[in-house]
Image 1 (tube, one colour):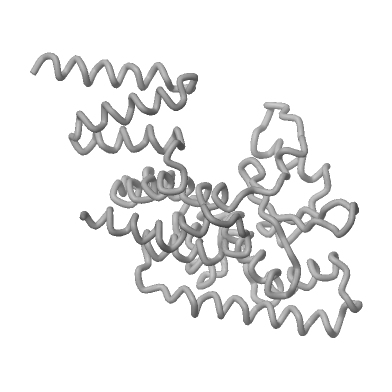
Image 2 (image 1 turned 135 degrees about the horizontal axis):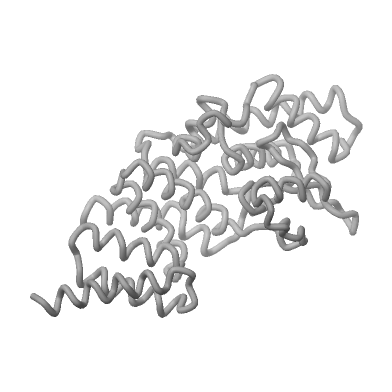
Length: 290
């Protein structure tokens, strides 16, 4: 087995088996740390790091006992989380270096106290969980969020950990959508704030890293991140295509051809189908001339 195969096998045992057997958002911080360990930080002590986060939860619990009603109202818990994480500990959005891959590693976010929406949200969820406050991940377009579902039929509270734990109403959500997709006039629908699966969240983290490592031309980490996506979803169209391109760059022409053909079978209506067909034709033309 190659080093890449060993790491993918580690990923399957540490994370994928749990994702496929149980859609449990309380494990997202565990998965995020294993992601960091396998991709870039082999010496992470996942258990010890999680224990450090859980200590934060206890600080929130103690603060709520002094300032909130019993039991605390959801808005009081959110206020307590925000005060501790963003005022006391000074966690902040990394707007100056947003696309740095380090922002996608939870261990680095804990060290630097700065991150992007998805990593700050995973931290926020874990601290809330330890304080007995359930939050769900929200795969909002271009900006990850979390939400608390109220008991009974009392609605939900959507929170933006990237912006200090701001509570998001429909007006704020629409403004966020328009900032991310200017002049496209996309309608805000409830689909955008539905609970995300754990698999969707982890794949989104890996796709962020793929983009960063492709820009940096770190093809080894790019390929590993892509294989980690495929370990979760073997029919992920983008990951299949990207594997084909990576194989082509490595000179593995026959394998690349097979994978790119698979991409068109999985997603025949893909926006880049014509471009991929051109690549396939060039490969076949080159083979026929040999």
